[in-house]
Image (cartoon, rainbow, N blue to C red):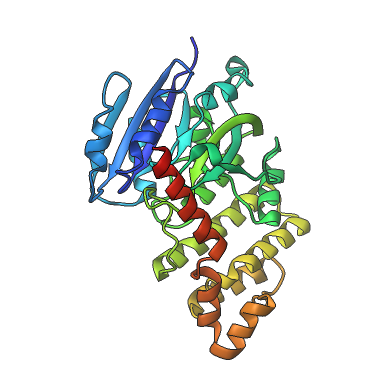
Length: 334
């Protein structure tokens, strides 16, 4: 019998997009599937919009707002599948995404291989998605995958993965403490629990750019989110060191800490000090974050706060124009 795949969709205020996400799930060419949607206390009509799909293979639940990790754990606890496909409430799977991944492995010979796919970003029109391969878009042993992630300071989308129940059980639940970068920590843990990744390049998923319909895409830099960010990075460093604690690996972890220091520096003295302590444990010292000349000029004139606001918060004109144009063309086509 072919394995059952559980497609798990947490959603928060995704009324405008949840229908597209669910449709892409139920339209998967893989025949044995269940779709579970968990509304994380939305204040819009996400729950009722999802409820229109409820039926033979689709289950819709709601809970009070508790964040992305808890919503995913709720969905996971309700699932029965041999494989888990995660899907945020505003993103989309290609119709044959799951089938192309599963056809690459022999489930009878073991399920400790972690499957990944290609993924592209879009604003409104899915067919205009831009695929930008990174060094993680290849099949790699666990330690190599994690070191590559840290060296390149890159990531894989939630939707790109297909996880066997065996790996999911070994990795454990999503960390409910994390409200920022919870997916980075979880999938690093899943990689550690696997025998390695198998990248299926012609399997595809589509990630909406900076949408507000996802439970995981709130990039405001509150203190709670900064604490979560540091905790996630620290846990990932620990995961890598559990596989390989060589001097080379510790140097890679040190660079990773340095790359993320700018998020806390210099305002959050507690996290800066924690970062420095971890750096010393790794055998090195952190330096003041470097800025390119434009933002460094802002720093020298107005201070670090203004420089970081310019770096993180000021939208780039090209991005604004692209988004507005795509929204207009999407409405015209619709």
